[in-house]
Length: 114
Image (cartoon, rainbow, N blue to C red):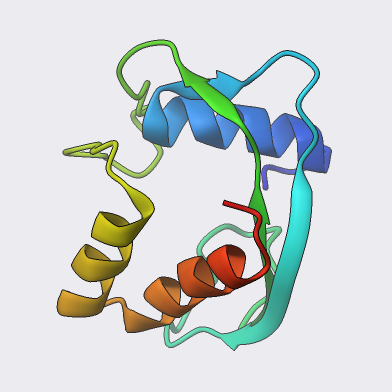
């Protein structure tokens, strides 16, 4: 989150910047999992972000694709966005270096959120 941003503002901005999406009109964000994360970085990612320990929260939200990710110059640079099935997302995350996020997607499926 940026300094002074609400959760809804951060969610809307991040979706547009990183996925080229926006929340569907009237859609509700459903938080379903959170955990404590400890950063391996020596310095905080942003000066206002708790460091080295922070909370990570996961949610689902119906969205619509509105274009390419906006990728601001000072933000993360997204090189590819793929819209895939849940099964394919789990497969790709599991096969790569992100098995924890594959488990988060599996949890959302188990909870019948996606």
